[in-house]
Length: 477
Image (cartoon, rainbow, N blue to C red; front, top):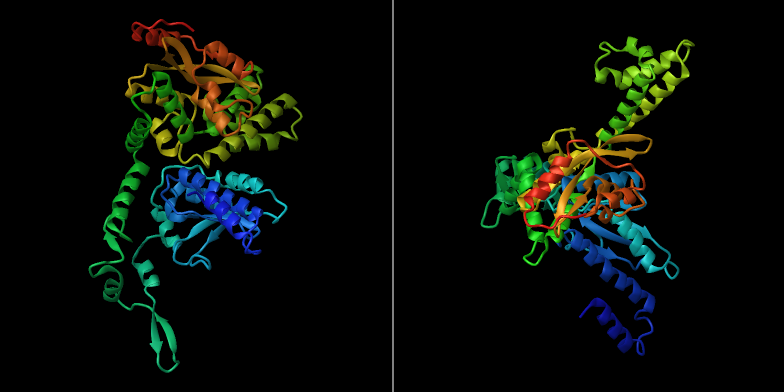
């Protein structure tokens, strides 16, 4: 019986004999809890315990740290710092659930006024906060914060901190907390016996709650540093989502959805492309000559797009009437894009343009990376696919772009992972990610809203090769 059904039954059978039992508003709030908890548990693959409280003027949900990946831990920690009204780092023990929730958690709050605020509003706001975490595979918490947060693994120093036990002081007639004085005492307390509390892992010089955590920790460390392990995991996850009844179109879409959820767009690359566009305009307008004295090598693009030298040039030029205003405007725009480039790079986890391994490890990339990875994944599942290069309008600039050609029911279609990710991260608020799956070129042109999408010369051969390799298919658009 669901919670809601039980509550309705209790309400009907008790309302005549108990004036204090519960109200319909109370039922509505608990119904919201019933709906909310499965949503969060589903996002976390039901691997962590979540606790909801929605009956005391604020609703909150607890998410234990040992159910978070490193990235989600850092996101949650940042949310606590930047949004203290809704996020809180909660230490154990808890006044209400001392035994159920022994570990540190993040608590996400939404305040409301009882009897006035609609519970649907509370749930909506709660979900908005929870979605700030990019829900990923549940991973064992990383060593970097395991010691700090006292998760279920510690080093020797941590064991000493945990080793205090109550000893009765006869003179004071009260218990005193006495720490262990030797490793032998620690061993006796935590590491020896038939049911030791911790198990030692030589590789990390860390003590874990059980041997399974040691194995998972090693697996996760390998996964964190190996692009090949990431690829293997991707193929496993996608394969699990396939079934024998799926059409090729559904399989293409499954891989499409996986890529969108896994990867983020590296806007550093886009901002650098914008800076390059301004530099080319500067060169076309014969304005680069005013900047050359600030470059050790005028043929070096890195020099011509150097942020600090650009700033120095702009500052020095303010009092130089010989430098035209157009040159200053170009430099101001270049500085703006380069500063945005630097800001984006700081959060892209080591993404390097042109390095596919860094895309798998950082989970950040640009259109070319996504097109190549989508082609790689499709080919692994014997789905015909080619990456296509071309160009597209982006703001006031025309920049390089890449997407994929696929075959659906004998017809040539296109998939644009990069544009779909822009919808996911809200840089494109007009379209939905699905708008960029399985479309003709004409449909993409319409969806793009006149962004002047073009296929680069030479990539028609990829399309022809795709069609020729799809033997027996009636190819159309």
